[in-house]
Image (spheres, helix red, strand yellow):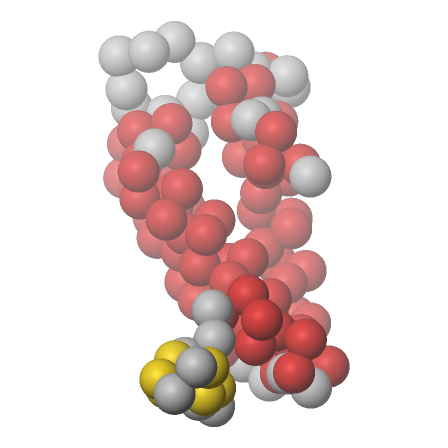
Length: 120
């Protein structure tokens, strides 16, 4: 969409396009943006999500405290794959339930993972 103002053609800012989007497209945009932003946070704070790090763990439930070395990397990879599945699948109910269970288990293993955007 191009607007013509004072003889010049100008594109409207992206924020003004959102009200013109259909509800289905807005839901699709949110469905992709939320897992993508969590995935970026996972990439930027990768060591937060693994147990084999120098920073001490502060577990809520001691049973979840120390996940052994190869398994912690595997769980982070599964977490990333579930985030991608939630963003890509048309009906991600099973992937979303598995993602929530894994996030809950990882959150019980270390309180450092409880930043505000995680549980909002």
